[in-house]
Amino acid sequence: MKQLAYRLKGQSISIHVVESERDLPAFEEFVSRHRILGFDTETTGLDWWAPDFRCRLAQFGTGSETWVIPVDLGPVFAEAVRRALRRLEWLVAHNGTFDLHVVEQTLGIPMEELAPKMWDTRLLAHLVDPRAVKERGPGLKLEELTKFYLCEQTADEVKGSMTLIAKKYKTTKEKIWKLVELFDPDFLLYAGMDPALAYRLFQLLYRLVPARSKAQGLIGWEHQLAHVTAKLERTGYLLDVEYAETRCAELSAEQQEWEAVARSFEVENPNSNQQLVEAFTRMGVKLTKRTKKGQLAMDDDVLTSLKHPLADAVIKSRKASKWRKTWFERALDGRDANNRVHAGINSLQARTSRMSISGSIPAQTFPSGDGYVRHMFLADEGHVSCSIDFGNMELRYLAAFSRDPTMLDAFLNGRDLHQITADAASVPRKIGKMANFLTVYGGGWAALMEQAHIDEETARKVLDAFAATYPGVGSFGRRLADEARRTGFVYTVTGRRLPVDPGKWFRALNYFIQGGSRDVTARALMKLDAAGFTPYMRLPIHDEIVFSFPEREAPEMAREAAKLMEFPVQGLLIPADAEIGGRSWGSVLELEESKH
Image (cartoon, rainbow, N blue to C red; front, top):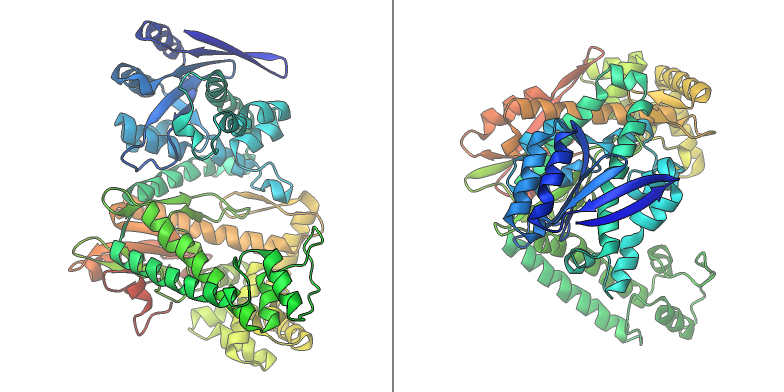
């Protein structure tokens, strides 16, 4: 057995590394003495669905003692890990959803068995302070939280060590996980510390979760939601490989076509700022915008403003390359043996708690109202695609809590809220709609001016008209801003505490609405899960959930799912509307009556 030691702020942490079967009884005796342990895995990568994916190490521990089990050495070690996982009453992990996938895929324990007894420090950290590091918050990654709450030196020495290990092996951080020797001492230290850090963070963060959040059951609620979204990740989305490959070929040809145009101006690489600056300078084009480093800028804003054939070619070649790599190649590269693509669904992500989708299906980046990208995702054989989304969720939520009579009347009596706003300002309906949503998203006259392509005077007039038409919204916003000014926070109805930055108190309204609306979607996911709809759900995207329903039963199932999703808030119903298309997700957007 190998023995490693580390000192965290003067406190000793012992790391026991199992090397042979003879070491396993001591590990099992350690497990038998504890009801709860930190847990983590080291794997060959993040692609838990891949046929060559492996769990290399499994780690268990307290804040002062950890054990590292070399699962890669064979079945005996894997079985010891299985016994430990099933014996423990509680597990603590950071980003535990990933470890649930790992254990299910490599050790055969269904996530349904382990999820109910897993505490996730990532979720707890968000409930304590959801701000990212760039927002002057602690962040949500284990390295960031270690630096903020435990020890900056440990974060750098241990959590930051994989970059150095990758350099030692002359590879990248993305590739090192498969290549690093199983008993590399630096790797073992990195692995052995993870359960200790998770355990210590759990002890600290649980105490810091606001009392109101605990009292309203938010900790359990978020863990249940994370389990539901993990099941959606596991199911995956069937990929139309032929469609994706065809789009890749088209975009590649388009990229090459525009690169040829760029070469006619002596630009070999459209992504080279230096070559572009030299080409435009030769042609007498005056460039003024500079980067933070003082170099002449060649971003899309600059290129668009030039209105030159070279600029047009560069924009179009970059666009074709980006679309191909970001959407179609990513999906093709990320599919499993059954041509299913598995998204990463971050159930608790933004400051406001809004979910995000990452990985091979970056759905929130897909063009809105367009089926071009969505056509590559298919309902299962014999199924059709169905999209169910909430109607004006944020605005209804705002009306329900602001109690503004005009806004409430519009929703209760089916009046056109966007037209009401537009008429009050004597502008087209689309500008009234922009003003309504900008209020929800915390935008001001400058944002309206940019989005609507109107002058400052008109933008100010529209927002003044909004304030005069819906005075209840302004009053409610001021109450929330006053609360934030006094306490530094605003609380959502579910008991979630959202920090508001000093001097930005006006954002309290936006945070309250966004956080509350997200919770409506979260509640819908859990209700659908309880009703047995999870095998049919594919993705939650903000206020929309996408399904794959058997074609014959689709109308009835869509009605039932929509009924489960709709939710009354303060007496005002937030309705859910279903649209059924053909087999591809994109077909829903091409329905004649589609709201998308």
